[in-house]
Image (cartoon, rainbow, N blue to C red; front, top):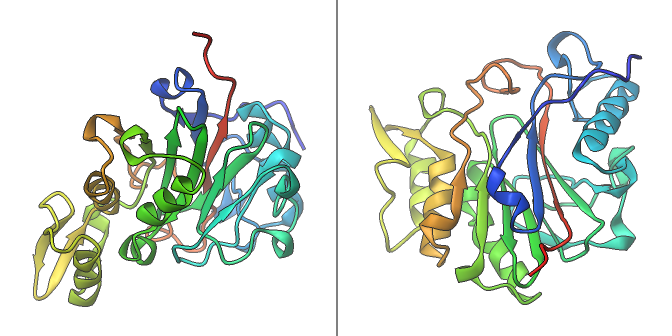
Length: 270
């Protein structure tokens, strides 16, 4: 396999100054073929495992780490959080059966631990308290969003000294609202997640006959604001999985998975 090809990222220029690296891979720069071409990072979608491992190795190297520093979760569309550190480094990196079980939120305060969240329409979110030096990575599909995954992440971070007013959030690419119509049950579940507030017009727009167009990125943005995160400290990416650079499960099945990667870096000198 050619190991010289570059791996492009979507990243946030604001992150480095805060002592964190956060980036989202695209579907480019890997060795997978067919529906998984080319940088599929998911071991669970029917791709050749050897190719997935090579893709993961490339992505980690481009992110500035070794694959054995990266922690993967067994994502189950829930809102449970797990704190990880030195002991968990490399969990789920080479095989699925030792990933952090039944977890959609990874939290760390360890400098050399890289968090990975896999998505292909669900929303990846990274949260940082730059003062407490606590980092979280979240997998938020509609079920996780309805279960207030972003709030559960804030609670888990709070146990390590984080405070909502200090949090900086980075919201990665999710499904485009034009591709995401839901029924009344999903709408009500998302509405309950922000009660007694109402869903904003950016989150939910009527699509006729009891259907709604939903923006899950905006939904997580709203929940973070309601939890006390300042809007000026929430950085959206301005990209959705309607962009051909990203895998989209709603557009094509089977398909690969891209990843949000996040790690603490050395704090800037005073």
